[in-house]
Figure 1 (cartoon, rainbow, N blue to C red):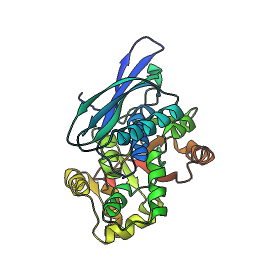
Figure 2: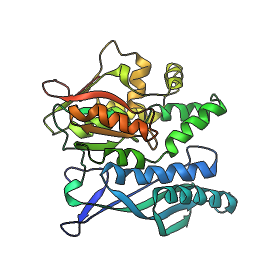
Figure 3: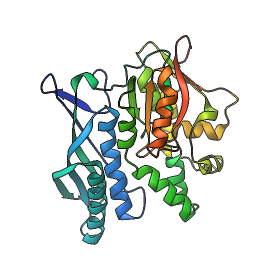
Amino acid sequence: MDEPDDAGVYKISEELALIQTLDFFTPIVDDPYAFGQIAAANALSDVYAMGGVPKTAMNIVCFPSQQMDLSVLREILEGGLDKMAEAGVSLVGGHSVDDKELKYGLSVTGFVHPERVLTKRNIKAGSVLILTKPLGTGIINTAIKGGLVSGQLSEKVIHSMAQLNRYAAEAMEGFSVNACTDITGFGLAGHLSEMVVGSGVGIRIDSKSLPLFPEALEFASMGLIPAGAYKNREFRKSVVEISSEVPLALTDVLFDPQTSGGLAISVDADQADHLLNTLHTKGLKWASIIGKVTTGHEKLIFI
């Protein structure tokens, strides 16, 4: 508990360890089926970030049965179940309660070899950082609530959030990956901070290399920033230094809370290009090299 990671790991034997995690949240999209898919992909992501393979899951449901038709719940569960099937995960149960606020997610158990567990704090100086999904989902979801987003953009963002990190995890196999985490509610800057605080190294990010939804910059310039972004910035201001050359809108994207974001992968420098190509062949077209792990900066994260 002194060094919290994306999931808990319990060693069973010299060959097997369990990875355990859970996550659930309120709807971020209007379509129930899409919400179920996104919530499931988000919950499964922590197992992939730890280098494991999810095996079983249990539903976590809070549902306002007096305010919503049960058909809504059915669609949510179908979305989650289809995403679990894509991940090769067996749904083995769950629990539901009657609640005024709709919530859905999963408790997930996965397998990993004890010697192949990926943690945040094992990050090594000289390594290269790769990000596998575009940034800006929190800002765009805020714009969606304001009725400012086209159907085409909404579908693109939903597809990204519902995409499993399974394919990124499979691409990492065979490469010298020393640390990994998934980018979610604390934003890119927040989750990278978790990787380097207390590690003895820092991270230098090239802001021009960041994969992001271009529309996120436009909406950020309009002030459509989720409240969580301001909290993330305040919490990590002592750790993160941002060059004056970085536009303010892009700074907002750096702290934007993501839902079911991509993996941030720290890999040996001589393997970075090969891993990036492998990610692209897996269909992760947004995957990009975003920076490197360094030493000697006053602030731990320099952007």
